[in-house]
Amino acid sequence: MRIKVVGPLLALSLAWLVALLSGCDNSAPVEKGFAGMGGDAAAFTPVVAGRPFSFPADHGPHDGFRIEWWYVTANLKDDQGEEFGVQWTLFRSALKATPEVAGWANQTIWLGHAAVTSATAHHAAERYARGGVAQAGVSVAPFNAWIDDWRFSSASADPLADMQLSARDKAFSYQLRLTSSRPLVLQGDKGFSQKSEQGQASYYYSQPFFQASGTLQIDGKTYTVSGPAWLDREWSSQPLTANQTGWDWFSLHLDSGENVMLYRMRQKDGAPYLTGTWIDAQGQTQPLHGDDISLTPQDTAKVAGHQMPVRWTIKIPSKNLDISTTALNPNAWMDLRIPYWEGPVRLSGSHAGQGYLEMTGY
Image (tube, rainbow, N blue to C red; front, side, top):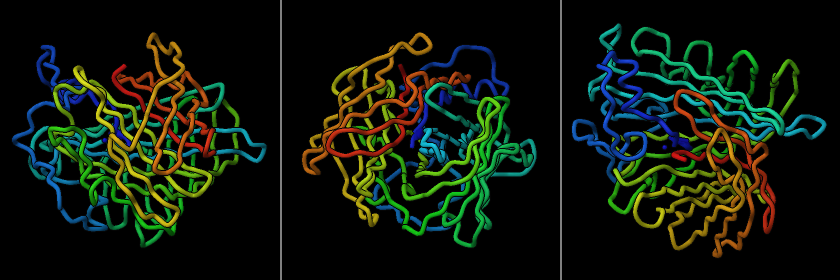
């Protein structure tokens, strides 16, 4: 959902966002599961197993669904080995289950998040836009996702083979090229990613094999950087239950060439719902279920008044994986109108590597 929602699934407070940007009254929204994503979505298109994916069309927006996102994270280093993380996300939130139209009658709200993280600094920024007036959107041919001057766009006829990624704010900016010759990865059961025992789900695919290179500016200094990047694409209408309070999402690049995606969906009552995908070096996938995964928070840090688990242990016995993840910067708090934690992590133990962690609802 990089929510990362997500994400990637993200901590989008949909009810609050709709009230803010659509001119609703000032009454407090009724929370229905984390970020309102467990609320009734009967008017919107449901997510069902067995839907075939169609590219390049599925790179673009999906009328009839309530929420979707284009979510990029990158683990980068400069020539001296200094580490950085970059995030770029565009969210589409539909106020009504109606097709896109031009002009102010459009019923879509767009939200952009961007961030840069180093071992000593973390900066995040956001952008909001109403659909239909060319301030934000996604087109397929050629592929272009944008909000204001933040862009994730194709530099070739193949939409996800050669991409340009850029964002800027007062304290940071980046201009990156992302390339990959590997296939996309369908998460879950052929792209049907279940998020609860009750059947809530999203359509979810990723490109975990991007290689990024370019320049990054943070606090007045410019760096030439490169490293692995990860794209998450999800869309849904009701991805959570009313009982789910937030999630912990991992995208991991192992030095072996394999990749791992993991979700832990926390609940008010009962054990968390665990799900994930093991991706081998050729892009072949194996779904992971609760019994396959041990995901345990370890050290915590107080970040912006919240106790955050910034070190985790992850075990997948069937893959001989037994690792710890450590935050590059424990203070990677996205201090935005919709706050959450997101930042790069290092891996140690049975496998070395790097990745990204998103934590919402704390």
